[in-house]
Image 1: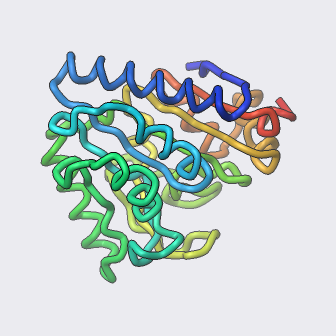
Image 2 (image 1 turned 90 degrees about the horizontal axis):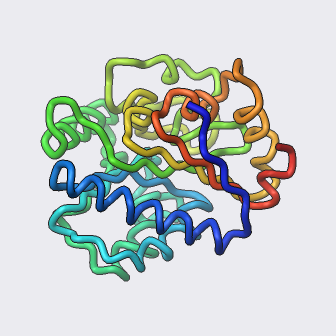
Image 3 (image 1 turned 60 degrees about the vertical axis):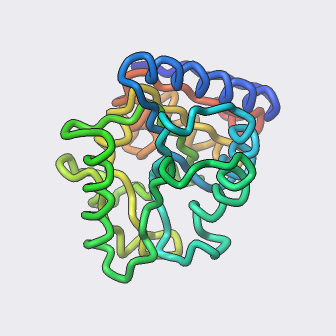
Length: 235
């Protein structure tokens, strides 16, 4: 499906993100009595998490998962969970029951992937679907820890995969698979900065692009793209 594309200054993008999450949360709660969201890291987390901390979620009905995580301690500056904890979870007083951290700091990444798969199934049922997936995008067009040309892109059966050879350090990670990301009710891709401009141009203008961000946008049912002026400069 062709995505909705919003190009605006960062404050307006954050307002749109907040509005979108509010709407999707209300829709999901009415439909199935819970709201499940998968989070990102990077610059989208840096700016997006403080904005999302202002949203009055019902933490008895909300479940926060992660799209990917690096195999680092939660105290590391590279930890997506650590970033969310600092900028959103702690300031907003998110309850422990609402938080489903990816255990990528487990030395056994295969076991960690199986554990997270089981956690998703426990919370979301045998046919799990997220209500909202928030993704950033790398300059190379990667999303979560799904990189261009990597074999993980072709995985169609598993929900969660261990990555031991990421082309971007650190090499060891956990990631949701492409079907798990694109099966969400709502997928939001947010790109900030001119380093993302070339990838976003290809994703939005080439139907044959094999970039992970392009695959996400083509396969998602209701994708939304949020671009600042720099990230949209080539579109």
